[in-house]
Each structure stands twice: as C-alpha cells, then as structure tokens.
Length: 279
Image 1 (cartoon, helix red, strand yellow):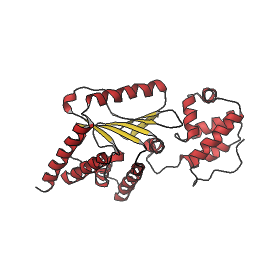
Image 2 (cartoon, one colour):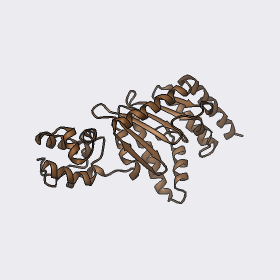
Image 3 (cartoon, rainbow, N blue to C red):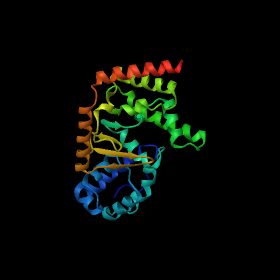
Image 4 (spheres, helix red, strand yellow):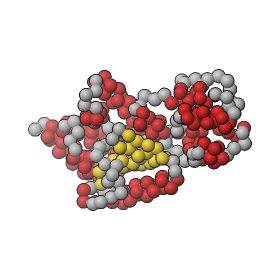
C-alpha cells in the first residue's frame, strides 16, 4: 500500500500520484490492461494516469482503492492532483499538452492558443464571454500565455499546426491585433519553433471542417487526441480513434500550402493588416 501521508500539492501531485499508482498496481501483480479491465477503461488510460498525462477523477480513485486495497489513499489525494487554473473542459488537455513530446493541431477559425498574442487571446476570450468581469478575462489571458512557455524550449515539443485560411481573414480584435498576431506567428516560424501550414479556401472539402483537432504524443505514455467545440472538449485515448484523427491530420497537411508558401502568405497578410492599422 502507498504511504499513509497525503501527497504534497507543491511537488507535481499528478506525477507523484501516478508513481504511487504504478507501485500499487505492480505490487498487486496486475498489468495495465488487467487493471483497466477491472475499472472498465483501457490499459492505455491506466498508463496515462501513471505517467501523469491524465488527471485522476474521484470515481476512478474510489475504484482504484477498492481494487488495489489501498484504503482511501487515492480518494484522499486525487483532489490535489485535479486542481487546475484552467477551465474545467480544457484543464486535462492543457496539463497533458505540457508533457507532450509532439503536438499536431488543426485550427479552423482561430489561431491556436499556444501561438496567440495577449491582445489576440484577450479578444477571443471577450468574444466567448461578453459579460464577464475584466479581471476574469485577464486571468484567462494570463493562463494562455503561461501555456505558451513550453515554446521556450528550442526543441521540445515538436509543434506542427495547420491553420485554415478563414482564421486569418476573421478580423479578431481589429487590424492592429491581427497584424501583431501574424507577426508573432511568423517570428515563431523563422525561429524554427513551429511548423505552420495554411489550408487555403480552394482546398475544398476536407476532414477537419467540423471542428478543431489536437494530437499529442508522449515519451512514456500512449498518444491522445483532444476534440474541442464551443465551451466543451474531450480527450480520447482509444488507439483506433487516435489513428483515425492522425490520418485526418495527414490528409490536411497534404491539402495545405507548404510551410514556405504559408510563411509568404502570412507575411503578406500581416503587411495588409498593418496598412489598415495606419489607414
């Protein structure tokens, strides 16, 4: 049984809880698949809990304590591991994103969050929450900028995004905000920190027309796909589902402009917005 003390929330509680789960599972002589069957989840889900890429929900904490005979250890500690500064529907995906070795994303109507400027993020947040207090909007913007700190590492994660041309023509926050957003994006490209391909209007019908998709790969856990809608989102770990969306992303990259042509178009649009800004 894991130690009787609660986990320290300041010491990466999800990683610690995952390590304790692995210890308890191995002590019980169970594989990830066997434990998953007892909880009616996949073995990969157990692997993600152990790696700290998924948060432990209260319902699974109770089942783990029962199956692994750990008293109430997981129930007592899952609360600390579940605390997040992000909105509920996105919290688990944001936390997994920070652990990913590679992120591949398609964005249909906006610049992806990791690539946004504060002004662009503020305009998006205000559009989603038009009657919310300014202080809360600033909290959302701060959280989004903190997420982008993972780009401070020059090599990790690999970030490859396909952005629909529609996102560039939707004047979010006005021409000044759009000019700044596109210049920021081209700067990241020129620093070789992100691969960006634009999906032009003339690409026609494609498999990402109904929403945004984010694929995440990890060094020590199975891949995930995050599917997002308006104020909702869910993580999927089913291998067949992940493989299907990976194929969709590959089809999108095949239909999109090359990175070089995408950069040229971004430069041109940033210049156009800049001219509007000073008109």
